[in-house]
Amino acid sequence: MKKRIAVLPGDGIGKEVTRGAVDILNAIGERFGHQFYFSYGKIGGSAFESEGTPLPDETIELCKESDAVLLGAVGGPQWDRLPVHLRPEQGLLKIRKELNLYANLRPTNYYESLVESSPLRKEVIEGVDMLIVRELTGGLYFGKPSERSQQDGKDVVVDTLFYQRAEMYRVIKLAFEVAKGRKKKVTSVDKANVLESSRMWREVAEEVSAQYPDVELEHMLVDNAAMQMIKNPKRFDVVVTENMFGDILSDEASVLTGSLGMLPSASLSENGPYLYEPIHGSAPDIEGKNIANPLAMILSVAMMLRTSFGLEEEAEAVENAVNEVLNAGYRTQDILSFGNRAVSTNEMVAEVKATI
Ligand code: ATP
Ligand code: MG
Image 1 (tube, rainbow, N blue to C red):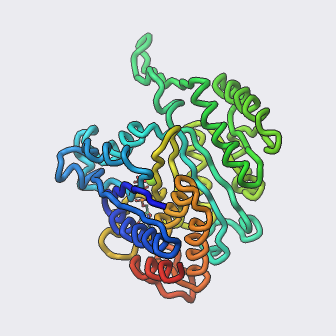
Image 2: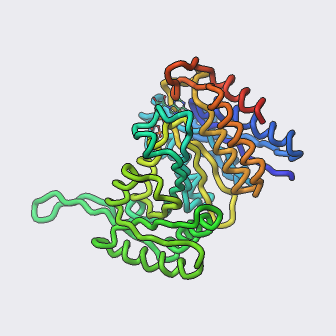
Image 3: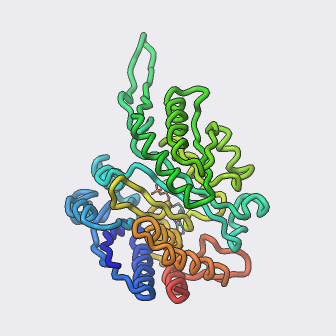
């Protein structure tokens, strides 16, 4: 198979972990006989430094011509005082918009060997295998008006929660599609006892559910979902929810089984290309020290192989290699536990590569 991959290293440790991801893709290409062609684009603070903008047009073009996009991370304190439209994060928001990425997928998996980095007891998290599907284009974050004013001499604020039925439909449909290949259960999270938008969300979930007789649908109120994720995370398979609820729940889910440095994500659109990135940021505090955990990025590569290219065996080869390396005791400093020596970013990548 031949595939073109746009690689956007970005800033901080984004650059370090992206190098590792490309190494791993090359190893997979070699073992399974695929050719991956990499084209590099600038984004974030480093793009601002050389091009004067956090997202140059060439980068957008490059992504649109590629089969998938691999992104490191953007941001850093040196760019915090720039006007808003020039800040690194704008590059990320803009590329999401340009590629019409409407759903963000974040898996949370249990790693036996990392049980000590979890805030929860082993009995609670053992076997957790959950996927949060978050709507990315609508809801409170984009509704207009969003403003502050004076009414009768009092300060008032308005934020608007706006959704089109079609936006709900496509993301819920995607959740059911993904669930078909998993444990066949979708938990649709809303606040239908209070919000009109949630009542429509529930209707749409029912409508989609009718097309998937093999997939179980349950509705859950968001406050209950937040609690269940801590009390009994094993009960979840695919969780689908609107933008803000998904923002909050996906951060909650991300700490259940361990470190920020372990968690991948995928953002999907209707026609591709999809974008893959670790959920962590550019971590300026550890930049350039060769100590960042590259596994979130490497697991993002596994998601790319599976979701964009349909390469299940290859994706599993990456995931199994990560598991083996962890079981063998290799740890970067963020997931270090008693009795292990910390390895560098490069050593971790090399171990995974050798295992593949
Ligand atoms: P953003 O706003 O871009 O999401 P953030 O402020 O949430 O960034 P991160 O950059 O994700 O923060 O870093 C949060 C903390 O986690 C930092 O102390 C950072 O060093 C640590 N961290 C993040 N990613 C990794 C990683 N891959 N390996 C090790 N430590 C990490
Ligand atoms: Mg963050």
